[in-house]
Amino acid sequence: MKQRHEVLFTQLKTYRRYTLGVLDGVNCEEAEIVPKGFNNNIRWNLGHIYLDQYLWIKALTKEQVDVPKEFNSWFGFGTTPKDFARETPTFKELKILLSNQPFQLKAVYGNRLEEVFPPTEMGMQTIEQVFIRTIFHEGMHLQAILDLKKCI
Image 1 (cartoon, helix red, strand yellow):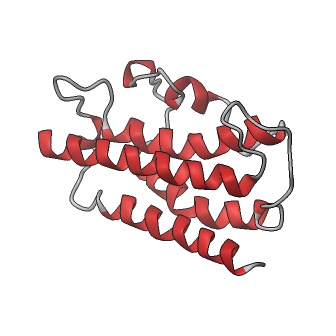
Image 2: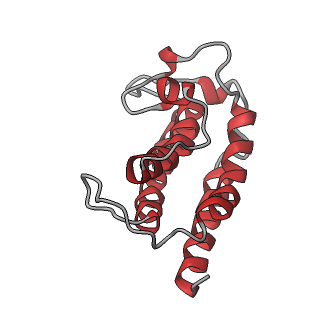
């Protein structure tokens, strides 16, 4: 694997550890609170971060991804915790999924980072480019989580 790819996966793991570390001290009840002025809660943000990487991979490759189809109706763009059902993953389950995701992405896509696909509407043509975009996206939702924590 090329050095820049190793760096990319190190960044995925490091930023994910940081996102999960921000959750220290947040309990399940607090993760459910939707403060006034917000549309979502911490648990929704976690599910959305997890789903986003797979949605962009699927959009690029047109291949099935290993994420339950219900995730899109719970955590997809435009959804809110009002869309949750009882079988929605718990706060704890989402933290485990997020913790494991960088390792799973490396195992499945680590040797495909430079494979070229027809461009997405954002012009991305490789999985490497998708990961760069999803790291930025995770940072946006990390800020949302930090803002939520201030309000709860």
